[in-house]
Length: 171
Image 1 (tube, rainbow, N blue to C red):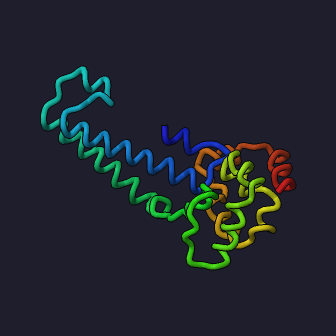
Image 2: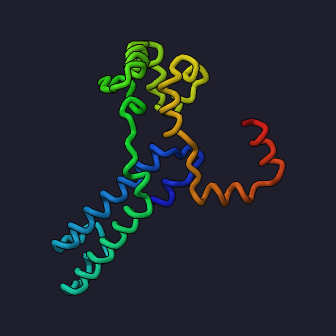
Image 3: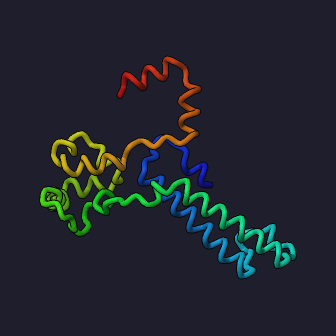
């Protein structure tokens, strides 16, 4: 499931963090449920009788999976995303005065509120945002960078030279 979610051409760091955090939350829940003998998340396992040692082994495997993911993706999982990138109508709790001013203007602009409903990524990637809100854009763009999963890298490698050239010329 996680592998499929990390594929696609609209993946960015914010979406990646969300997907990984959700996966770790599910693993933690599975570990807790298996530890107390609740196997409903594993239909095949719930149809068999499990020994105490088996349950302990399953919990150890889930612990290892959880720890491995935390270690491998620590930089993404600990990344702090300013709430205003995802919700422009939130509280303005920034220490930087210029950021506060741009956020105040952004949060009161009725036209932009409508555009924000189409999604934060589409909103921040509008042509006028870097010009109108340069300080906010400079922060937001770092979280919106294209995040190539291995699927996208492989997909790009197998493109024809003409397709690669078209994409390069377009950007």
